[in-house]
Structure formats: structure tokens, C-alpha cells
Image (cartoon, rainbow, N blue to C red; front, side):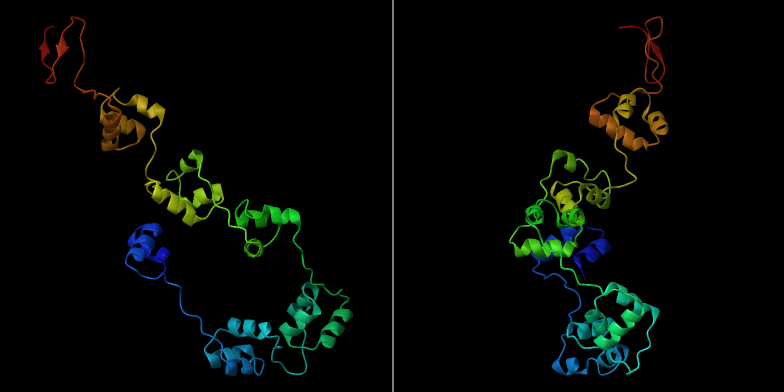
Length: 281
């Protein structure tokens, strides 16, 4: 299974699972192997409906359709095409050549239907890259660049690789590191605009445990209360456990206040731990 699934099942981080797998010399799981198309299978494309051919070949209908369109083979249909509202939507959104391949009708039939409906033919526009756009590649993540330019993320990544530009890598700052473990990795990735794996790897490298919503950070105001009353009283007041209060107080080196100790009375006597009065000195 994938490292992510194994980590979830074992209750470990993805990074620790990956390191253990590499140490044992186990290759990463790449998913089920893709079944290659044979020449005989390609020759059957378009000779029958995609659904029927998919059942015969033991493939999905989407796989058969994608393969047929990629080879420019029209869909199998009877000579008389009955136009549907979905077909008409294609006329408004795609060029005639693409509609022909998708519906398996002739170019003249597509053109006749489009003209009869008064639809202007869509032209396939190719948006060329400008020097200004190329200059942005690698300065931020592909996702951010794509969002800024209004392009697809895969198109940005492909253009960057084609120009030999390395992917942008985040330089971690103290402020960014301070977010790790204080919220979920998913929330940190959204705030910083980087991947979940990058967050997880950085947090693991720094030895920071995963975010636990049941654990609260101590505030300066809470620290000031430590030692002013018994640990039990402070725990009830702050909504924390007695053990957490005791651990925090000991860590800060704050002296514990015994609830039975009254301090010095007006005569200058003190009270022992058992509550017995004793004189000064």
C-alpha cells in the first residue's frame, strides 16, 4: 500500500514509514500496473459502442473513450444521429473538429447543426507564454504561479520543466517553524501555501509532534497563577488536569503552596505541616 495509507494504519508519520521502507530496501508502491493497449485492441476501437467494447476488453468505459479520442477514431453510432441538448452544448464550447471526434458524426453534419442553431464556431485558442510569465516560473510554487496567471497548474509545471527551471523550494523562517505543531499540518500548509508532505517532513526533522487539539499551550497569564494556590485549585480554575499543572510548575521552578499552610500569624508564629503551632525561631 502507499506510505500514506500505511502511516495512517500504523499511527505513524508518512516520513517515518518512508524512511523505514527505504532502510529495508522496499520499493514504493506505485499502484496497480496499467494494462498496455495491444494492436488488436486498438483495431476494435470505434467498431462498437465504447461501453460494449469496455466489457469485452475488461476495461473501463472512460479508458476506451479516452483511447479512441486520442487516436482520432469517431464513436460508433448509427448513420442517423439524434441530437441531444448535451450535444448542442458541445457545439457552443468546442471546435467542430473536436465535436466530430466526440460524437462520431461528420464535420458537415456538425457544421449544419451549428449553423441551424445560430451558434458561432468556437476557435481553439492557444495562449502563448510571455517573457513576463516565464520570469515568474520558479519564484513560487507552481500552484501559486498558476493561480496568479490564470493557468492550469500542470501547464505551469510543464513550462517550467521545459525551460529547465527548478521547482521553488520554501526557505523556512522562524515564524513559519513556530506554526508547526500548533495547528494541523493541513492548516499550516494552507497558511504557508506549501504541500502537506513538506510540512510533515519539516516538522519531523525538527522533532515537533503532531498537533493534538486536546493539548493547550500555556499562556503567561496562566503561568502567573502557578504557586498562588494548590495545584488542584489551579487545575480546576484553568480547566486543566492536576498533573499538567504540577508538571508545568515544576518545569518553571515555582514553589508549591501547601493548602494547609497558613503562613505567619499576627503573633509571629508559624503553622507546621500538621497544623500545630510553633513559636518563632
